[in-house]
Structure formats: structure tokens, C-alpha cells
Amino acid sequence: MADYNVIVIGAGPAGYVAAIRCAQLGMKTACIDKWINSEGKSSLGGTCLNVGCIPSKALLDSSHHYYFMQKHAATHGITCKDLDIDVAAMQARKATVVKKLTQGIGALFKNNKVTSIEGTARLIGNQQIEVTAHDGSKQTLTTDNIIIATGSVPAKIPVAPTDDKLIVDSTGALAFDSVPQRLGVIGAGAIGLELGSVWSRLGSQVTILEALPDFLATADRKIATFAQRELKKQGLDIHLGASVTGTTVANNEVTVSYKDDKGEQQLLVDKLIVAVGRKPNTESLGAGELGIQINERGFIEVDEFRQTAVPGIYAVGDVIGGPMLAHKGSEEGVMVAERLAGHKSEMSYDTVPWVIYTWPEVAWVGKTEAELKGVAYKVGQFPFAASGRAQAHGDTSGMVRILADAETDRLLGVHIFGISASELISEAVVAMEFDGSAEDLARMIHAHPTLAEAVHEAALGVDGRMIHA
Image: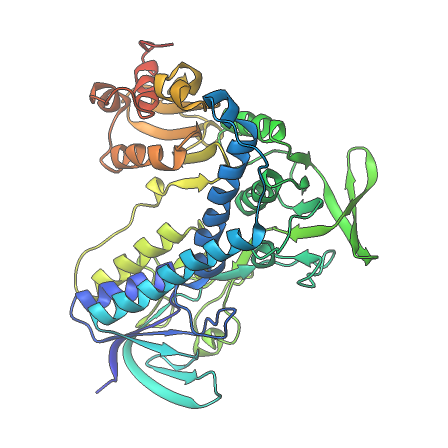
């Protein structure tokens, strides 16, 4: 008889959610995790809670409060003298938020009877896992099923090797103890823009180098254009088509060499953040030796229900590719848990929302116009400048754009750049999950005055009947 019905490897959003759901469904469940925090203690939650989603949002919110007081409070009749920023206090608040949430997962495990095991896991059979504890001791556990949720790590590039001092990855960028005077960022994706925004708001002169010629290439083009314009107004110096060719560290500075349409260029900064994406964390797992198929990019290959080539072994989250988003991984974990319990659970990847937490925020779900080539569609768009609530709030940048099938009116994509876009997008996700139409959104009564009215008006605009624009 096996020690457990299910063992989950990794306690990030995909892993801990899968473990809890398995336990809720009556399976004897364990979750193995090796994460150690800066205090040398075990810390559940993976990258997201420890050095990703949560700490970055804590810093984004703190820096936004400072930026608002500095740039916009006066327009609300608020005067503040001797405004200053205490980076140490900000970092302490971030640490408190992280600690509270990571400890909360431990409480959830206890309440749901999930056994938490500290250490590094290695697959030694399709039903066996060797766990090496932090003190070097080993134990072998048996299980009926295994869920791999080992997540991802920051991708590295040879031309900018990190030293955790002057050249850092996203983890290092969350831990600065002072505001760099000149900050360089390689990569204008979500991570680069969010981290660049944090330190720009606090006073850094931020230059972002992006190799691709288009800004936010996967987003709606009009939304991306609005976002780029607004971020430049906020002080982010964004260079597109800029390919980094090398870095040199000397005199406590970093010289970044890059090539763009003007030829060879150089950038001198005090700190450099490498934010060129993430790669799957599969090293030392022993997956390949067991027969689990791993593609050329390092991702574990799975079927539509997240099962690997080895029966009884599943993989979810960043480690299998697709959108590297915490909420996507969590829902995959739920799906696998429920299927193990005999439920016919499935997942819709067409309605996974994307969010970039700049200010204003960028969010979307479904297809962009570039992805709808050959498909007849209609567009409705509404500017936040025409929203009464946005005007009252003082944040009127951006718009809501809705794409609907020209014949059926079925929602194909919803794209938002503006205040609280991360919250507003959920309405579109619900509508699309139920195969809703633009007419459905247009017929729903939205409270006034709210930002959600912008979604309502954009839906009306699909048929050319907006009221307020």
C-alpha cells in the first residue's frame, strides 16, 4: 500500500491548490517543497508568493501611493510637504505581506489535512519519490499519483550574466535597499514593465531595452499603443528593436551595449534588471530518466488533461508551458485533482485572462485583431475619458475594446487599458466562459457611476449605439 494517494511536487499556486483540492476530495495527499526564504526558513507559495506576484504588487502599490502624492495629490486639493520615501520601510511592509500569505498556506494545509514535506524531490519511479531534506537526510515515499508543479525560474542571457549586485534578475530587483539613480531593464514584458514602474515612480531614471520591434506584441495593437504612450509620459524610456550585445561592470556601474536601428549604442546604469522571461524548472527532477517527455525548451509535455507520457504522473503550471500565469496553473491543479477523483473536469484556455500591473493596468481575454485574420468581426470601444467614475477618480487614460463575431455577436476578445483593468476583465471572462455575446453585456444593468460602465458602453458600441461617447 502506497504512503499517499497523491504527492504534489512544488507548493506554488499550481501545486498548493492541487494539493488542497486533492485532500478535499478525500485523497491522502502530501506536498513537497524546497523553498527557503531569506531567513533560512521553509516558505510555501513558490515564486508567486515569495518573489513574484505578491511582493511585486506590494511594491507597485506602495510606489503608486508615493507617485500619486508627488504628481497628482494637488489636483485633489491635497498638499503634502517634505514628501519622502523610506525604502527600508517599504521593503519591510512587502516582507510582512509575503510572510502572512505564505504562512497562510501552511494553515490551509493543516486545515485540509495536507502533509507538508520540506526538501528537494526526485522521481525514482512512476510511484516513488526520493526527498532530500535541507539537512541532507533522505527518505523514499510511495504514491499512487504524482503531480509535478515545480514552476519556473528567471531566464538568463549570456550577454548579461547576473551577479546579484549590479546585474540582477526579477528576484534581485524586488530587494533593492535604495532607489537606483539610473536603472536599466532588459525586456519590456510584464515583469520588466512592472519592476521598471516601481523604481521609476520612486525616482529612478529608467531605460527599458526590448529586442522586439513591437511594444507588448501579444496585446491588442491599439491598447499597446495607448499603454506605451502613457508609460513614456510617466518617465519610462522604452527602446524597441534594441538587442543587447554585451555588458561590462566597472566602477560600481554597468555599461550595456546594444544594437538598434541607429547602430551600436551604449547605456550606463547603476543597476541592471534582466527580465527576459522565465524557463521551466525541471533540473534535478529526474523526469527525463523516467520516460517523461521534455521538449527542446525544457517544458514537460502533457496531454489535454495534463498527464505526462508516464501513467499516473501529471504536470501543471509553468513547467508545462502555455501562459505562465499563476491563475492558469491553479486551475490546472484543480482540474487534475478532480479528474483523479473521477470527475469530468476540463479547462478552457480560451478564457484565461492576462494582466500587466502597470498604472494604468493592461488586461485582456480572448483574441486580438491580429489573431482574427479571416474572421469577420465587429469592434466596440469606449474611452475612460468619457467615464464619470474615471473622471471623478482622476484617472482617465485608456479604453475598453470589445471584439465580437460579425454574424453571431459572440464575444471573441475583450481588451482593456485603464484604471482597475485587472478587476474589470473578470466580467468579460464570465461572459465569454458562457459563450456570451456583446448584446448580453449591453443588456446587463451596470451600477452608476462605476468603471464597469466602460465595459457596458463598449458592448453597446459593437452595434454603434453607445450613449456616452
